[in-house]
Amino acid sequence: MTVAEKVAAANEKVMDIMTNGRPVWIDVKPAIEAVPGMEKNLILVPGPTIRPEDLPIPLKTAVSGAAVHDGLAKNIDEAWEMVMRGEIRIAPSQDYNCGNAASSVMSASMPVFVVEDKYSGGRGYCVPHPGSNPRVLRWGIYGDDVEENLSFIRGDYAAVLGEAVRKSGGIDLIRILSKTAGMGDENHNRQPAASMALALELVPWLLDVDHPARDRVIKEIAANDRFFLHVMMAGVEAIMQSAKKVPYSTVMTGMGGNGIEFGIQVAGTGNRWYTTKAPIIKGIFLNPTTTEKDLLGYLGDSCVTEVWGLGGMSAIAGPSYLRMTGGTFRDAKERTEKARQVSLGEHTFAPVPWDDYRGFPVGVDIRKVVGKNVLPISHGGSALKTGGQAGAGAAELPMDCFRKAVEGLACEVKKLEGE
Amino acid sequence: MSDVSKILNLFRSELIVVNVGPRSFAEVLEKQGYEAVQVDWKPAAGGDKKMQELLEYLGGYE
Image (cartoon, rainbow over all chains, first blue to last red; front, side, top):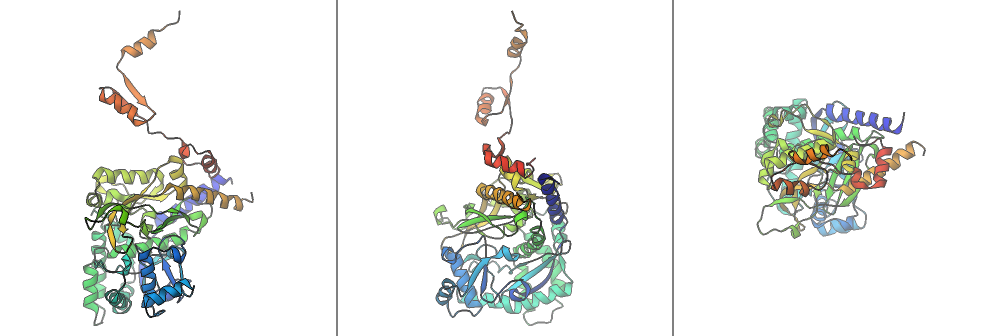
């Protein structure tokens, strides 16, 4: 076989995994028990590899807070000293098939959603979405109130939710996406329909759980219209775990930012990152006094959903997100069309009625991005340099990452070919 | 003497422009009432030869 034929065959295999993937939410467990390679003194952070001293303020706070939460340190100052001494390590979440949205981090004791891809057998993990309170570790804020919520999530919340999910026998995320097709979710930054459909599936099982905190957990889930996002992130990670094991493939399998750098991963080179300066997310601000100077670069792994065709890739499915962030219906259509130009396939499970019943484009081919000079657009929430959410909007994925990925993959293929 | 009737016919007929250059060339004509079709074309990899070679090695991008 020629290199071209091997690349084509590898991409066909990855697209088979991506388009037939069947992510099913099967459990809630502490990260140390669920995530292969997790260690007590390891804290997973969003985005590509970064040195601790280079972490932006919100992630420093989140890492230190998580260390205190896990009992590794008495306070955040002590925790940070331990990080600097190397006694607490940090690593990119996506290298462990995990996703950390915005400034979320994952420590050993935190509960994670366990999602299994029933088609390929891969597993992915994500901490629960903490709710609508703006004071959360997820936005780089830590304090007594944040710790109280983290402790509730690790304790009663995880116990009740875990039992309900296990009783259900697993919740099929494709079914949720199919049922909510045409309900206006783009499923990265907007998912009220999917969150409601998920709650519909969960509540009967939750009502069967005998636990004093059951009603509070039901209230938390029912009131959180972003609950589905973190379950879906684990689902995408489950699919990507299998997709990342296909040599020669030019399909993008990971992406994320740590506020300083943004990176992508490609199936043919596994967990290798191709990075550049993190782009700014442009859109709206929650506070009218915020300016672009206050913004951190792209922060978080939630854009891994886009790797599987959600968010900006399927912007046409959620045009109201465009309206909210300063765009138009036409912009939504253009974003999806751009993604189609550089993608190898299209999902069939959630056709969009106002897009001629077409599905979400999936499987971004780095060759097409570089060759056609067409950049897909990702949706995302923006973070303040000092911590807290700034707003929401969109960012073009940086071309530099794709050019480096083409070089890196070609180099890897040459090695495999003995050249 | 060569036959120039064909080219003269072209100039006498309705002008429809196919523009492969910057979009502003077509927009100027449209403002003057002419029809212009914009061809969305870019050189492969923005004209970067090294990238073109790597893309070719990896099987192209079409």
